Amino acid sequence: MTVADLVVGQLLGAGVKALFGVPGGGGNLDLIAAAGKAGLPFVLTSTETAGAIAAIAQAEVTGRPGACLTTLGPGAASVVNGVACAFLERAPMVVFTDSQSAPFDHQRIDHAALMAPITKSSHILRSDRVLEVLLPVLHTAVHGRPGPVHVDCPAGVAASTMTTMFDTAVFEFDEQAPTAADRSRLETLLAAARKPLLLVGLGARRPADAGAIRALCAARNIPAMVTYKAKGVVPDDHPWFAGVFTNATIEQPMIDECDLLIGVGLDPVELIARAWQRTQPIVYCGPWRVEDTHVPFAAQFVTDVAAAVTEIEVTIAPSEWDPGRVRGHLDGQRRQIDVSANGLSAQRVVKIAASRLAAAGRVTVDAGAHMFPATMLWPVSCPSGMLLSNGLSTMGFALPAAIGAALLERERPVIALTGDGGLLMCAGELLTAVREKLRVITIVFSDASLSLIEIKQQARRLEPAGVALGAIDWPALARSVGVRSWVVTTEAELDRAAGEALACEGPTLIEAKIDRSNYGATLRAVRG
Ligand SMILES: Cc1ncc(C[n+]2csc(CCOP(=O)(O)OP(=O)(O)O)c2C)c(N)n1
Ligand SMILES: [Mg+2]
Picture (cartoon, rainbow, N blue to C red):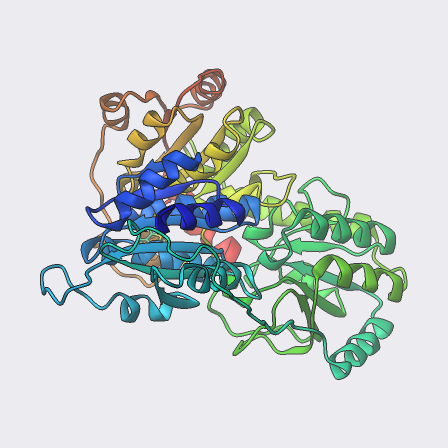
């Protein structure tokens, strides 16, 4: 048995479903060979960051670590955005980089220093201490606030034969628990609340969390808003669903009516960079303590979410909320976002595509102006049913994330909603989807512009500059790698294309040529 065999065995044991990346010539090759022998798929991506994002998607769906590998130097540098993404999305991931054992200058950069601000920890694999390195790596990735962990693999180590099979590795980790003071503050606030409101975030996405939260809403008549990443924890059609929460303006009327905010798994990394102006007390309950935050949590109840929520259900009295009133607020938000345009609007694209495709599979969303209608109008019914980058909010996320998710359930399609600028950053992954024969339906909001930035320029009365992309023949690009495609300019064409794409076995692409003229008003409706 080689070190690589042991590493791969540990990854499989930890629930890793695939290894993504672009190999270099060192220990990577031994890891890939060992993965092949052990039945852990290696999935070649066009860029290292796309590989990391695919791994993040798998981690978000399974709750187990994702994994990716890169070569040394340029590979390590190229994966940085993907690792930063895992860090701010709170996604457990292991990233392996090759490294030199001898002091050659060629391709040498300090990997540990590069990774330090964007990983929970960085380690060097050693042939005499494989488990002593790997067990804490896998534990650290998922423990507390999940995130990426880096492992440098010096030349020759992965290929070396194991001499000692079992090295003694005993590790102790602090378990977080609510303090007595936090518990009593929470109880006092719960006892006084007449109209509490749940703000559900990325730390509450396990199926058990969703079950407990939905039960609390129903049993105590408590409405819930969800962050982008928590879409589906309380489904859009749930009687107590109160909309999406990002600390924006459109949520204010709903918030104004409540007297206590309960942040369930609410990690402030998901909130837009805006001072906290809510006047009600806010408490936090979640699986990790939130440090250095601008949100003034009056108490932090750090424990298992499902257990904490069930405890709240027992403690709290039925609220005074009227379900019709909550529904009224939700309808109001949906009316405000529904800004029309002369041509095909992004809103109509989302609604028509969702009516055809939302029930069929998961959806991923990229960063950009199309994200507002996508997150507010695409219905989601299960946790992690919508995957997007809302901690780092990176472009180039939707397609690689769709690939990671589609590999987990090959029979279900994954719909990737992306801007044209975002897709340009990862268009090479269309070929990855073809190679892997994945049912990924990419819908491009084609507006020849970095629209979100363009409307920010407009809001500041600046001339558009540096935002025009120019025309891309998306169907031609798709065809060149074997992706079936459609270009649509009307609602009827989109409806037909979505139906046909759903019937296809492999990857497909729909270019929706949209009228972007309503994005400015859309942004104002959401963020004021
Ligand atoms: C990697 C990365 N670069 C830059 C940005 C800043 N940014 C956010 S949205 C956006 C424009 C996105 O354009 P596009 O993908 O076409 O979507 P649209 O806004 O047109 O819907 C930019 C440049 C980012 N979030 N991530
Ligand atoms: Mg665009």
